[in-house]
Image (cartoon, rainbow, N blue to C red; front, side, top):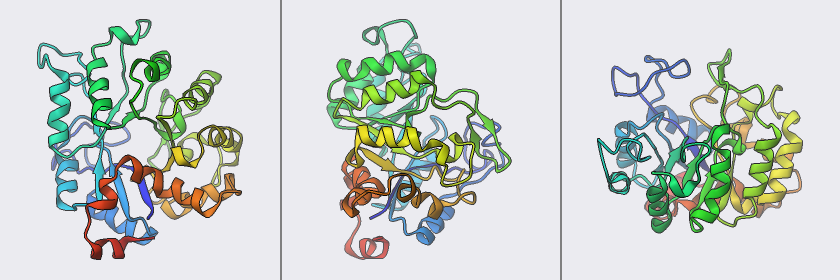
Length: 303
């Protein structure tokens, strides 16, 4: 079973309310039906859907329309982060509402105010609620949040932390000629050190994705080989999960090319290790993807 652990689906802003920016202008469209066609063509059986922002409606509808095919991770906005107590004084209740909608994790770009300890963060109750429920945190934190990220495993020991896109800290994004994100300096020493430090904690995971946006080369992105191998040695494939980052990679390089990357950069993987990277780890984080579908659907989508 191949699982795409991180994909975005969205409609034009005039069809479904969402934020718009240079990467996802108001008219850009990435409907679920297209993702399903891409998955079928690439042998991908399941996917984890992530909205572009806190707007959850379309992703929730898509997951409900295709039971067992998709899991979903919500995106934290100021309310669930505890930064708008005037709107909602109970951020864990906001998380429980998302869980009731079918979301199985939370993505954030903010853990707390830089320079203050995580113990003072208004988001700490939500992080504890995630841990209590066994739900993963999708971490996509900019450089000023790295110190708080390093505190997180000790502050919330049971929380499963998934470092998005090889753990890089997003900053200075550009949009390239293929309408994809691009980052010129993804792995300064502070980022590499943080990713390796987090690997010492058994509940930290690393997403094997984003190479297209982080490399200065064409596939197989050999300029990233050193850092990717160091990270793979630290985490092992049992704590790494492959993702396409659809729709940004839909046509260039395409999911089939991305599924070949592990064979290039980690050629010594056993079949079991490759299976963990390409689906087994994601299924351990989202067991509903393995269990919800009926036998006919499983037979159709096994890869």
